[in-house]
Length: 97
Image (cartoon, rainbow, N blue to C red; front, side, top):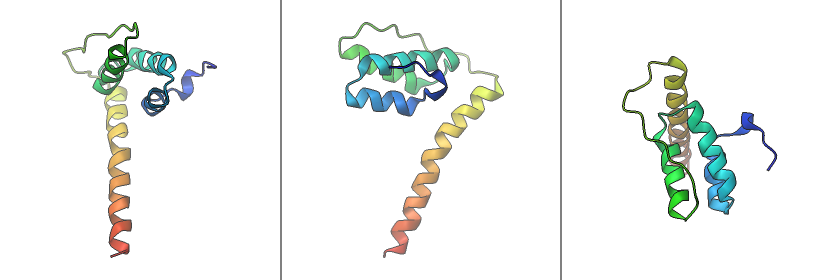
């Protein structure tokens, strides 16, 4: 895999994991955790990979929440995208009733 961290996202890691590219998924999860250590979804991704017998290091989840606006905004934005998709799907569903 050509290393382009600018394209590393949790979605890409999960896709790699589902497609069987476990080492690539672990690399992305680990990279993202260095940037955002408060993301439980990234830690869970590494746990799933470890359960498959891969040697990955899972960092402890920090107990103190970040006071960093960038980390908070990033977390909020990651949650906003699925919410907007659900709203749009409900609108489409109502159109076909």
